Image 1 (cartoon, rainbow, N blue to C red):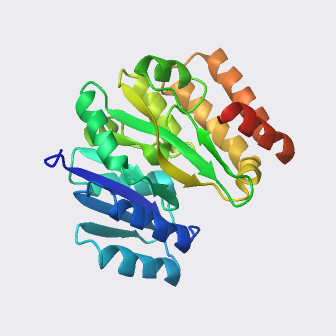
Image 2 (cartoon, rainbow, N blue to C red):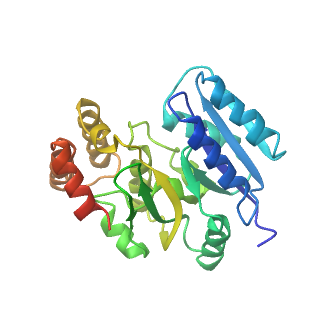
Image 3 (tube, helix red, strand yellow):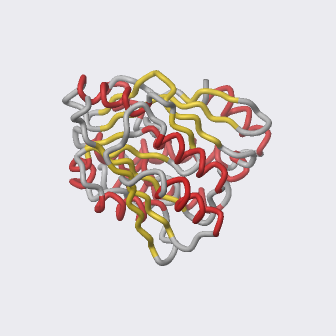
Length: 272
């Protein structure tokens, strides 16, 4: 394991909270296996608090960190694709700017990679938490067969937990530029072309979802992005029209629910 080299890719933008960003950086640096390099992409102008975290908590603490800046906010897909072009190693571990990586995350996923040489995408369970609703697990299908069935209806990976083969991702052009669904579109495209995946049933990341998660997951932006997503599945992934239509209607129905009902559905049906 000591010879396994990997990049950690993380993006930050002005809308991120400096407090959670600091905890996310600390959780990367304190992991039981050190990243060979950390690639941070700054997506447009940011405030001084986030700048302070970058200089004091990342660059002063880790000589393996590399920081790249985009002049204007370009969105997550473009920022990640830019970051991928700067990664030096075959394996890339994603990390979010407001989530806490468990201390054994990298070690666990390296073992998963070495134990499953036919897979190119690895993820895990997460816990989601906010200030009032407590903490609950978001499970995902573990075996490649279950992932292949699941991906037609929902994203089979928790993005902030994913480690992937960089060459496999670049072979498909990286992340499609679809608002808040760039990762789901990428997994669907890759799995549809025979790329295999695996999810560990351990919780390897604690994700802060904020108190307005259910309110944010709705509205016209989500409606448009869902239409783009299903159009992408139909045109690029060659999915059957009836599957795209049914999946889109169900997903849009959930997004457009009243907040109280949406919370109930998420807690009782979409989370464990």
